[in-house]
Length: 345
Image (cartoon, rainbow, N blue to C red):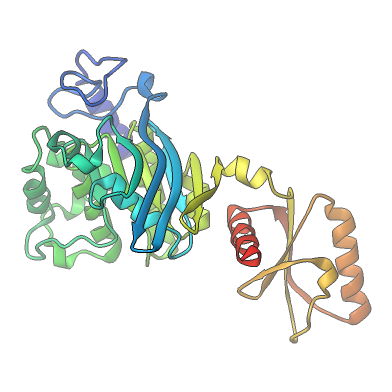
């Protein structure tokens, strides 16, 4: 997969003619895209803001689903939005995509207001939903050709197939594809118009571990090619592995934002994880969090904390199953944030 991506990138980079290092968003003309088969922004564009949101609100009657969101996404980065069901992330993303009207606030996507439904904006974004309804009796290549026809300057079919790793399935009918292959086709459809910005919704839901890792490789490759990706996911390890920056939403607001390193660095630096056998209860003095039967002790003094925990286990004859010591993960930060919000009412 990595060699395939490199080959596509090299081919398209060779075709760059007159790339403008300082494109003007929202205007026509050469904006750093590639002639013939354009491929997103140049390295010089990486400091540009692709998405700017200020004071975004969306209400349904008396219920406010989005409550004053401020958000910015830079060109060439993978930005992940996390949050429990009902947090407002889907509503926020649908407003950015132009599918839902906002109640208040300012929104700019590639220099356009998505609420205007401008065709020029639609030509520059790609959307990969959780499921895409395509004709099952078309071949993979025929499906891509169909969607390429909706764009003025699409990527070549061969480049799309190579980019998502579906070369061998080119002439296979869609209904014959595995779940992972169908998801790759979904991404290829989203990339058909060579978008500057790709909205990627829950890209690996239902995947086995090998398929998930392969999908991660593909998203990383898109970033390496200069694409900007707005990712929504329920998998914390996925966000930690892929995202340059993460926004955690709860109750219609962004409650924490930063790189995975910044978010985990703001928490206690070490996490002690274990399971308790035989239905034993952990004394409340340890102040551990629990998820799926696994307890986590976050601490800045792992030696002292581990000494206290193992001392209690020896004294009470308790087995600490799957005991491990490691760095605090994004999932633990996320769970702690949501618990704190729940306890605050």
